[in-house]
Image 1: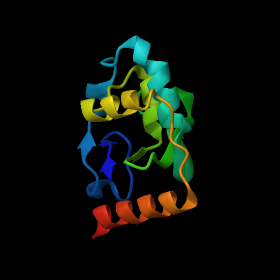
Image 2 (image 1 turned 135 degrees about the horizontal axis):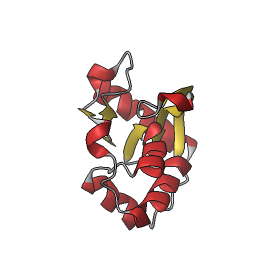
Image 3 (image 1 turned 135 degrees about the vertical axis):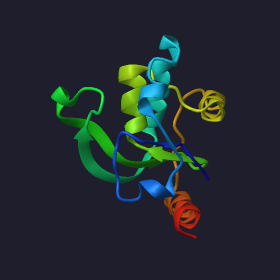
Image 4 (image 1 turned 30 degrees about the vertical axis):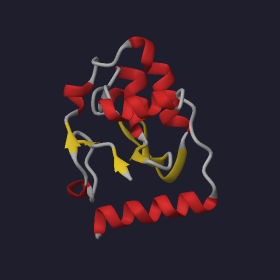
Length: 129
């Protein structure tokens, strides 16, 4: 299981367990034509955990609008907020992930209960040993 990085601008208790990148350095780097297909892929994949919404660190006036949780597609996992930042600001994802989503024609996989559990176990093992 591969995991997209977390953004340093969004504080979490377990942030130290994840690779982190600056959201400010990611925004505006994704081609406009990829924003919506990629956001739909990220948004439409299986939500493993949902914990509500947090404030947009790029525009605090919007309030708690950014979804916070964890999503998976069977091969990759990511903080659910990636979809929001891809759609709203053109945040670029790592090239490997973009190619992965492209090979799936930006169509989220439908995972079985067993695949979801396997992914959850894999993430748990990667993060906590």
